[in-house]
Structures are given as structure tokens and as C-alpha cells.
Length: 289
Image 1: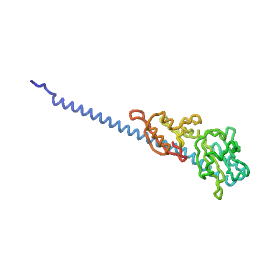
Image 2: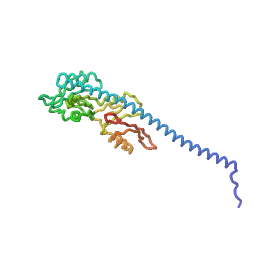
Image 3: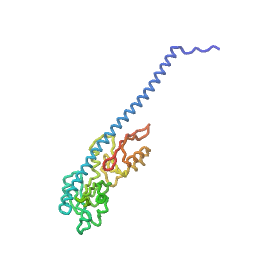
Image 4: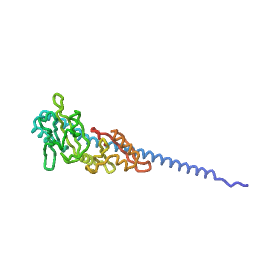
């Protein structure tokens, strides 16, 4: 049987060259895609880290200045710890001269009450100006309040967010600093109240772009501030609630990292879908951003 005539050498060479070029194009396209994806993720990582550092610095500025001012007030209060009128004046001046705080109290320890059950001058900011009142009572036993713990521990602290129905009437967090006598004995506690909404105002003021989101959580994972959110008692949810809705296994890893007060970067989302670069860190008061 006579065999059919095969492809000519020129044709075979042309087909080989065409296949080689096509293969190299496919390989180069895949490599470019991988390199482009890597470059984009590196840029996203840098952007997220920069955003984290900028936001953290702004919030830390408020926290640190509040801490420094409160400790200074504690030293002043120690000099006037038995002067009721002077203590009222100290809290009022503190609120007047510190725009970021909503209110301040000086709660006196039981050894200095001179026959009274409570004495806690409290001044707070309102639309009508600076108001003052005596906060301690049987209905408001400050000896049992979390913000009074530094009296017993002699360590300053930030409280978890709470809605203050007895003082500022707002969702807030309180920084408490112990007042200590020259002999080292506890005398009382001075406080500074910050509105939680202030954190959202700080975040919004940064104007970091439509592609970015910023969330601030407490030690237990409660979301207390986010961009475009003013924060209220009714809309507070936890990072765990968000994880259940997102249904992304990586998000659960993120919640663990936040609660453990870790810092780092994480990519969320599937490989073939939209992905999100997340940078996270811890503030000096133990909250995460």
C-alpha cells in the first residue's frame, strides 16, 4: 500500500514555531498574572499597614494625652483631698480645659468620708455648659463600680464601654487613676470620660478612601467604632457576630488574633473571588484596630 505524503519540513517548522510561541505566550501571561497579583497584594499590604499606623497614632494621641492629664489631676487632687469645694472646682476645670473628655469625677475613699457614706464630685459637659453634682449614693455605689477598681489595685485602667445613665448619659469609656497619699495609702480615684463616638469621629476625619474600612474593638471583641458609624448602645455588636455572618474560615482566625491582642496581616476571601487585605494591631489600652 502506498503511504500518503507527509507534511513538508517547512510546514512542520511553521507549526512547531507557532506552538512554541503560543506556549510561551501562555506561560508569560500566567507569570505576568502571578507577578501582577503579587505586586497588587504587596501594595495592598503596604496600604493597609500605613492605614493602621496612621489611625493607631491618632487614637493613641487622644488616649495618651487623657492618661497624662488625668494623672496630673490626681496629683492636684491629693493636695486638696479634704476640701470639698476645691474638689468640685478641680473636676470642673479639668472638663473645661480638656475638650476631648465628656466628664470627670473624684471619688473619695471610705477613710476620708468623715461620717458620710459617699462623696464623689462629678462634672460633665452638656449643651448648656459644664454641670456638676455629687454622684455617690445608695443607688450609685461607686465603691462597687469597675472604674473605682484602681482604688484597690493602685493601678490605672481603661474601662470597657458602657452607657452611663447616672453621669454623662452617653456611651463612653472611662480612664481611672488612683489618688495616693504621701504615705502610699489610697485616698480615692480621679476619672476622665471619653465618648465612644469620638473614636468614630477620629476615624472618619482621616479620609482614607472608599476602598478602606477601619474597625475598633474592645478586649472582648465588641466593635465600638468604625468609619461612618457614630456608635450607640443599640448597634454595638461583636467581631464574632460578624464572623458568623461572613462565613469565611479566615475571619475566625482574625477574631482569635484580635482577642489575643496580636498584630499582623491577613488575607481574607477565596483565591478566585474578591479578597481583602487586613492589617491589625493593639492599642495601649488593650483594644484592637
